[in-house]
Image (cartoon, rainbow, N blue to C red):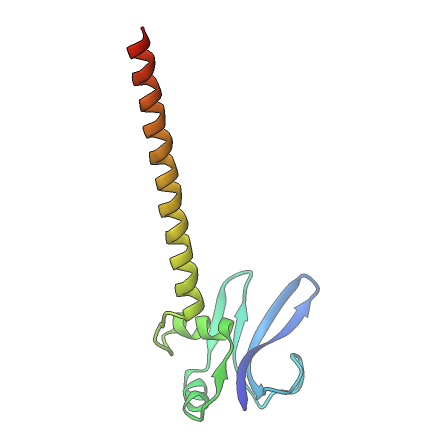
Length: 121
C-alpha cells in the first residue's frame, strides 16, 4: 500500500519535512516513490504539488494524520471529523457538565449553611 508521509531532513533541532509517497513498509527516511511537497513546522511554510497529490490520492494512497491535516489546510481534502477527535470532545463536554454540577452543589450547600446560621441568630 502506498502511504503519503513526511520525510525528515535538515539540521539537528531544525527539522524540515518533505511530503513523499512511499510504500508502507519502507523506512521513514528511505527512498520515496515521489516527492510531493514540502513542510517547515517552524515557519509554517507549506508547498504542495497539487496535481501529483491528486493523482496519488486517486490511485488510493493513504495519507498519515499529519499529512491529512496539511492537505485539508491546502484544500485538497475535505475536512472530516475523525472518531478520535469526536470522542475527545464528548469526554471534555462530560467533564464540563460534571464540574458545573459540583459547583452548583457547593453553592447550594453554602446557601443552606448561611440560611441556618441566620435562623440560629
